[in-house]
Image 1 (cartoon, helix red, strand yellow):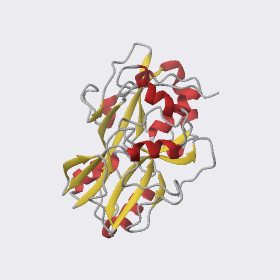
Image 2 (cartoon, rainbow, N blue to C red):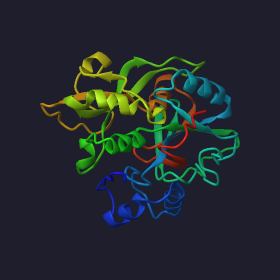
Image 3 (tube, helix red, strand yellow):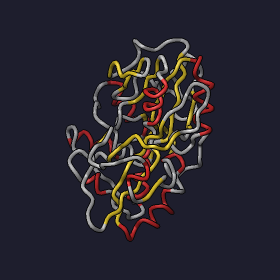
Image 4 (cartoon, rainbow, N blue to C red):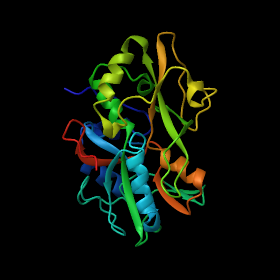
Length: 279
């Protein structure tokens, strides 16, 4: 039986009701406005996804960018231009309404955060669903590897812009975003072994140990999420992160990109332990 976890951001009763819901049931709760919080701990066993929506003019470059950078951007599904339904990952879903929070970047600057993007959607928009480490958290828990950040009140891990440069694709370029989890020293090898089996959750770590090696002078200064102090028996372990398209948007000044807000993910119909469905 899968181990479950909780995060205190909204009514605990509502969260408990959605822990063992299907991906479709959570999407319906989000679409109706019944659920507005983060998706950590919901629809256990289902693959969660990051979102990046770009104009069709940039879709080819985004596709190449994902293929060249599969660690931060493991590609799960791509919609047809103007079609908000991710037909492979979640038939019947709507990427305009099925995430509880979205971010809009214009010319590399965050300009708005909204609860749905129907008013922003255009006929030339193409949506990309990318693998997410929230799925990885559950896989590690199921392997008896504690995720200490999930036991704390806000349940968020620490996320940083690293000094690792992604492989460029056309006009798209910039640094990789990475997330950090404090892992017990005696469980690091097991953590690498388990996480490597889940490419849709970013796979094996990108770095273990000294944060300065990946351009982080101070773990307390995060770009997203929250740092939780390391214990003496823990080591910082870093994974590639699906927030990377947001860093790319800021670095290259793409005219427009719509993304998820960190923690507010799209939940697919794909099962965590099911067949690989990477494109």
